[in-house]
Image (cartoon, rainbow over all chains, first blue to last red; front, side):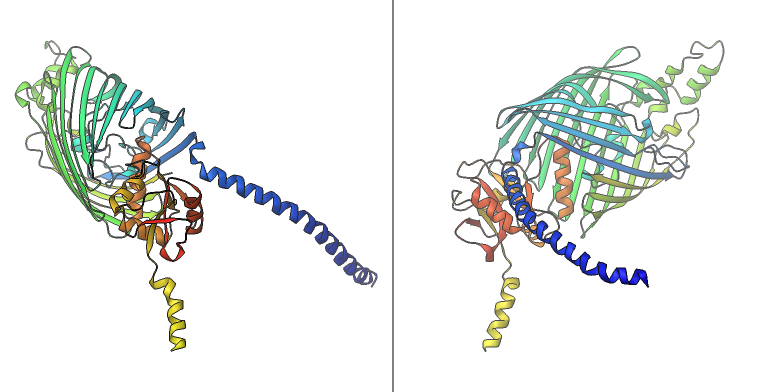
Length: 405
Length: 134
């Protein structure tokens, strides 16, 4: 009884309090509106001056899972499924120093390197004229059409750039300088790029980790595009060192692509020539992709072939026996494997897949790839580098989420 | 008859939803679709009359944005996103700034020399100049 009485009295009191507090908040509301109007105005000024964004961050993330029909190791995949070979993240920062000068840095952490971030780009660029720009620092080695966006899966139609072309050059970046010159025509642009520099990297070669030095690196490219068609030609030359001698190395590439908004055709052809028994390789691919709403199915045919098999006269059986036989002059000399036909390659690969743009800036890709027609070679599979050829072909099933932000 | 006209006038905003490309009143008198496309893909940086260009896109997910890109850049939204991620991560450029509504685009274009954007033809008034009806 007592409590009910109390409540009856309390209700009008509470209403009163509410009214008064409303009154005072109405007063502050006016001030608040004035404040907000000022904020909107200053925001509007900021929006009208977008150049104030001097520091920009962008990132990309890929998570892939794949498994293969055997332990051949195509694109890093074996019979036991794995997330590591194609999962990675990247973070890029670009700092604008002046209207014409910019510093760019990109960190990439890869699943198969324990996600330890390493610097892929670190360069300063300066635009001398509207048509001419120079850059200095660590940059991507521009050997292919997709070199610049090599690890940005979101920017690519496939689950991975065709291995036959992109997998034969273990060096992906260099330290040096480059110059880019644009010639604008009425409806198209022709860009010339020239670069020079050097590189030093640990790579996996014939199952061993070795130090690869690239010195006296020079190269150039010409790219013409009208936004629908792109044509590109490039070449590069260098002296490479894997352990011992300097080997003169030349690279040639041709590329063409067509994209009318729904149909996309991409093709590249490359030739790699290395002095001595290290394999020279010709390779190429053609991709057709078709956009249907948020789905873009694709099919790729690609091939590679070693072109200097006569420089490796010994069979793998002979060399492996010599290496493991005490008393043989090659006993224990693992590097001698390079003299054998282990490095000979012949391979044709068929891929079908689909890119599904699930939401803005997230694409999910599915892919089935079959590598076959190795002839009497091991098809350049990591799993076929031993004394005998273990696999005649390999199928790889993979799924990947690519995002950019 | 009056009822029919009334019904038509309600329909009009939908049936006449045509995208028009606008610039500041100080902008050029006309542009062709390729000139507009080159500005919106970052390939050219100035208007035909020499003004430094400030292209303004609508935020993604708006029907007029899709209509503009279908007609002018010929790319779907997914392809545009992929294109810009390639440009951004190769240091070649940044996408045009975006605003959330055609009203905001119109007032920004009206107040910024060199600005170029697109709105619905029904929203055009003296504050902006129509340079292209793609």
